[in-house]
Length: 87
Image (tube, rainbow, N blue to C red; front, side, top):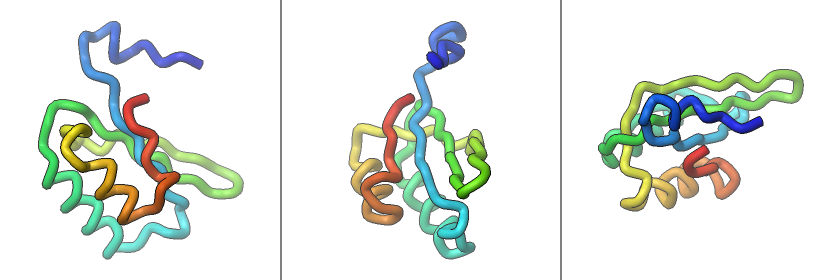
């Protein structure tokens, strides 16, 4: 499906980060938070947690600049398949 909610409200489309649920630890959450805070901007962030039977999408409340190295930081932290970019 096509999500047009951002366009309808005049907002920039969010970036999406995907993490398997079993990989989430307090240390990983802290590192993810640091990475997002290091790239402030005006693009919202979504986190998709995946499990064999359930996927959950969270709006994180961070606003980032996805064009200044954030993708590289996220891929280094979580793996190359974790970064979906703007969706």
